[in-house]
Amino acid sequence: MPRTRVRVHAPVRTVLAAALLVPLAVACSARPAPAPADTRAAAKGGDRPVTVTVTPTGRRAAAGERVKVTAAGGRLTSVTVTDGEGRRLAGEVASDGLTWLSGRRAVPGTAYTVTAVTVSPGGTAGTSRASFATAPADKVNKVDRRPGNGATVGVAQPISLVFDHPVENRAEVERQLTVTTSNGTRGSWGWVRDWSGRDRVDWRPEHYWKPGTKVTLDARLNGTDSGDGGWFVRDYTTTFTVGARQVVEVDLDDHHLTLVRDGRAVRRIPVSGGTPGGDRRSWRGTAVLMAKEGTINMNSETVGLGNAYDKMVDHSMRLTWSGMYAHAAPWNARHLGRANRSSGCIGMGDADAAWFYGQVRVGDPFEITGKDTKGVVAPGNGFGAWNLSWADWQRRSALR
Image 1: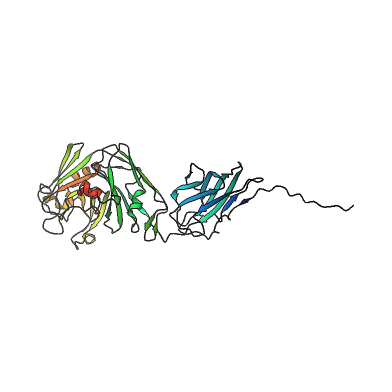
Image 2: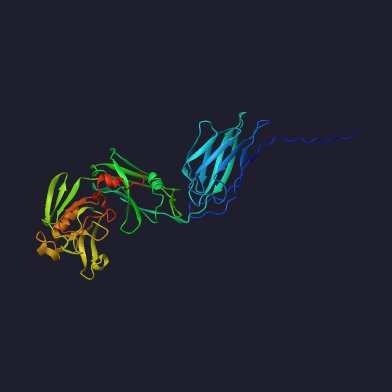
């Protein structure tokens, strides 16, 4: 009797997925990656598989978009999106289980792997995987920020971000910047042109900070398009504390400065300001102490004053980018407290300068008055935002 061969097929569960990319670190370029197809999580028996779709797609997808995962014929129970270094792109599954949307945008030049866990109408669980890669950025926009993390600063210190490349999408960039304070301090961002010519955005309170305020900047810029082909590819976080209330009152007509701490005059020092009647005059208004630079070489050619001076100067405290300092000026001793005969800086005697240098901190305001000056310190010339009214400063926000 002839034998009949019968082939018995064992049940097979399949997962259709796009080919995975070779993991890539976050960088300015990405290797080519296969474009993903719709993925399906197979189900048992007659239970239909769940179809999962991921956007963006492709090997050079547009950066700056949120990742979206959609399920058809079933529900999503969880979604994980990671880059080549294993960092997750967080997001949430909608209440109906049909979609998942990332909270952050995809970053340029980065490969992403998407893993979606689904459940079919019949209760069968499945897993789908897909990958995509974003096109590299034409240029990366980096940020120089002040103050430094962990610093203790004076009551006039703003938060200041200076950008490597122009920022055209100012409103979008500003939306990514969050300032949190320990006491609910009110403040506003304002856009200025830095003395270097670069775009800059500062955050200052309506009034000077309250001493003891703890401040955190959370700049969630990673994946944000700054415009003109520039992208941010990282986040920035800075935390700092506000120190004692110190205000330096500089009266150029009286030729003295007074250090006022917590409303009490601590010391009055004879000074000599910028020579009246020309380019060697000092600035007036509120200038904020930017840096304590110690002993430095000062050369008049760097500030457009020809060969007037070239000397080492002690106890140098920078007040503007244009070159106005407070510092020791023993060569000008006969004019201290009597006349303004400097090249624009606020000079004082050696002993007074040494003491004063040890008392002040970065962020302390110098409130400078005088009849014959070059004008008011501009917002971008150091930290001159305090010379604008609160209403005028608020109008500089891109979100107003």
